[in-house]
Image (tube, rainbow, N blue to C red; front, side, top):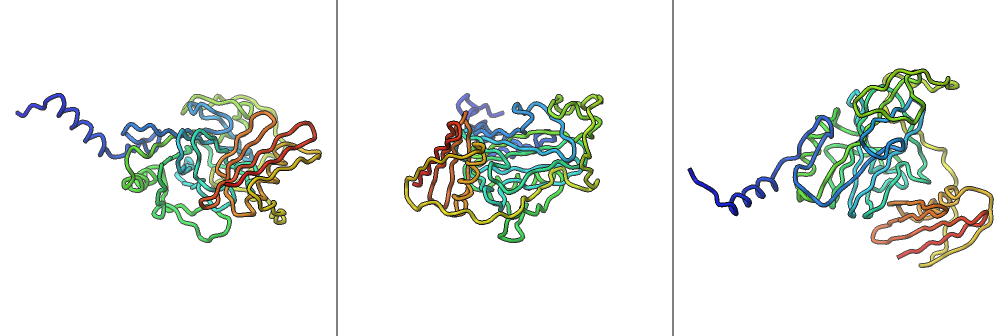
Length: 315
C-alpha cells in the first residue's frame, strides 16, 4: 500500500476540497463546502439573527435584508411550502440591480421601489436563499424575463431540490471560492395563531396557538396564492431631472419625513438611468449608492428639523 507523506497528503486533501461539489441541503438548499472569505447574510424585518422563523399573517408586508462583506452579485430566491420558487433579485423594477458593495446592507424593497411584498398563503415555512458571487451568474436555465418592462422573472424550476440542482450547475464554471450562500426563514401563520405580529419562534418549531387581538377585515388570499405577492404601486409622473453636474447640493425647507425626501431624489437619479445598489440610514442621515454602467453616483439626505440637505455626487 502506498503511503503519502504529510505534505502530499495535505496537497491531496486541498485538491479534493477545491473540486468538491456543492452540498444540496434540505435546511439551507445549497452550500459551498469549500472555505471562502466571501460571506453573505440574509434576514427578514422581524429577525436579524437568521436563527428564527418569525410569523407573518396573510396581508402583512414583509421586507428582506441582505449584506455582503465584499463586492458581490447577490441572487435572492423565495421557496414556499408548496415548492413555488420566486426570483426576488435581480428584477426589472427600478432599484432591482443585484450588485452590492462590500459592507453595505440592502433592503428589499428599498426606499423608492414602486412595489411591496404582501404575505399570502400557503401557510407554513418559507425559505429565502441568498447566493453571492464575485462574478455574475447565468440564470437563463432557471429564470427568464418575458419583457424588458418592469417585472419579476418567471422561474422554470419547482421545489428546493430542483432549485439546488440547477444552481449547482450555475456555479460550476465559477471559481469555487468565489461564491457563498445563506438562508433565512419565515412562517406564514393564520391570524388566530399569530403571537403578536412580531415575535419569532425557534426555527422549525411550530408557534404555540395563542389568542390574538382581532384584526379588522384581514385579507384572505386564494389558497393557491404564492407566499410572496407583489403589489405594484400606481405609476407616478416622471420626476424632474437633476442638474447635470458632477457635484450638486441644495437645501430645502418642507414638512415631511427623511425617507420621503430621500425617495423623491432617488427617483430623480433613477430617471437618469441609475440603479440603486445600496442604502444606509444613520440617525437623520440616509446615504445611497447608485450605478449606471461604469458610472457611480451617491445621494445623501440629512434632516435638521424641517430643513433637508441634499447632496448628489457623480463619478
